[in-house]
Length: 330
Image (cartoon, helix red, strand yellow):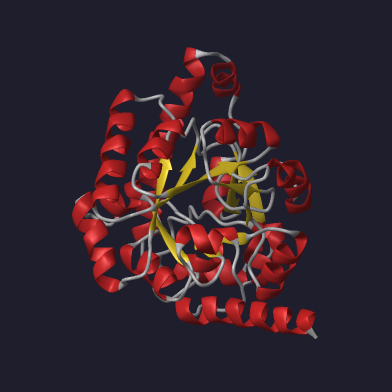
């Protein structure tokens, strides 16, 4: 099925393996692209979790597939040093042939300028119409609509409501959240989305280097096991409700809440949360005992019933889409 996403990304199946910290290891990113979708590099995961120099990491992925790959650019500017590093990573990615970018948490105008100068495309994460308009003002080529069933930093709106808020803006819209089975994929495409971004389902694959404890927890979980915690970044994040999460708690404490309401103190508190979670998630990702059960996941877990290869996962979705299209043609 050809959509504007498949044309922009240069792919066969309108399916994005979303960037995930800490789960986006090079083998997973490459496998998603090789299977016909597109894998998105998460630069912090590539360098700080999986131990690659950024340029060498991109080259390692490209040695595993000659299909297009993308880069996630987290563009918030609360840290000057981090922003400078992200600019460097974007420049290196372009030098290494990356032409598809997913931006989030900021104004993507500078990424758009760099990508468009080499014929690339930029899709921007949004959770409501006002952020979509800001992305459009910056010149983005598409929108990734993060709904209330997504893993990580989920939105507040349903997939249907979010599509209603963004479809008339004229750009291709990609559904992010709640897709864990081929039926979910078909439903999203039937609603009018031009592609789907998944994360949780790709963690439960053979190519992902997450621990067996993490993958099995995804397979066993139902959507009722997914909770939102503020203790990761100061804003709600979707995680599996494990003993670690129960001990950590879901709400920020009174001092933290007071700091999160302020201006400068809000950025300080979020930085503290982010640094703490950065190391906790990294430890949990590598922990073979399963005791560090700090695992992000979305409500799409309800459709994930087994650990499988990426080629099997993407192949099932592609076959389901072909079958649906054939049925519509009669």
